[in-house]
Image 1 (cartoon, rainbow, N blue to C red):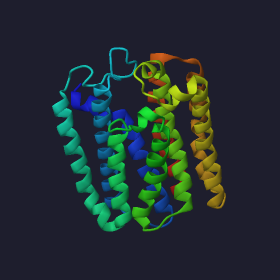
Image 2: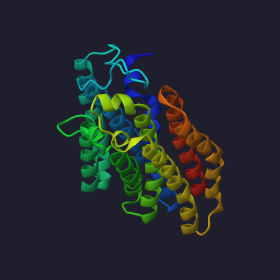
Image 3: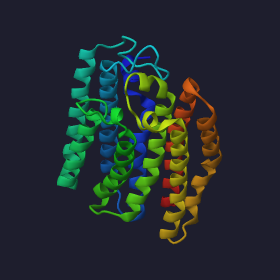
Image 4: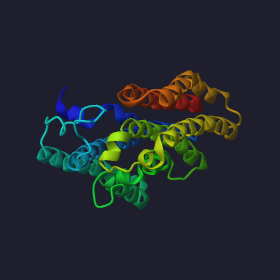
Length: 288
């Protein structure tokens, strides 16, 4: 496979696209939706995600976390498929492209969107880079929940409507919980190697048992929210279509509790797919 595709980590892009879809569906329900805005938000979000992935690849390699003991998918610097200089240039190019998309979004959304865009890129870099990387200090889970959930969904809704909605924030909690679940599995899988490399994720700090319970709690949060949203929309029964994914969730929870090490790669991949399926069904339930 092309090393640039590997470096972009296409399977992680569901975390970037899902909040855009769900936030846009709520805007559509409320009578506001712009196709051009939706497309540009999706492109900008994907570019920021890819730029963040490139940055993570670079800084994890520099810090020695991506080594021969890594249990997750291959990383391009770890395998020597690309050079540090190539990745560094790519980070600049990707983030500049995201900023160019952001010009239009800033034009329609004003300074709040400028602020969100700058913060998203900044935290995307310091997630694993800088003097106090979030992922190395147990703050990755909070970052993902806020930026891939609360901010992404409510920001998307704001760009369509020029308004802030409590429902958008609540929906952001559901997407944030599932996106954080992806990270939780990643950290659970790598807990031993991360300890050796002094990458003090929340899993390293609080242990395997806590991490497994955290995943269960996040799933409960995600699957409680459709009930609330249905109630707020006048007991809109179509939203309950999202519960067709419950058998998948139960299977994933069992895997998290009983599978170990590299076998969790499949669980991580399936959680990413669940996020997208959940988003599509939830959005469909809101719109119809």
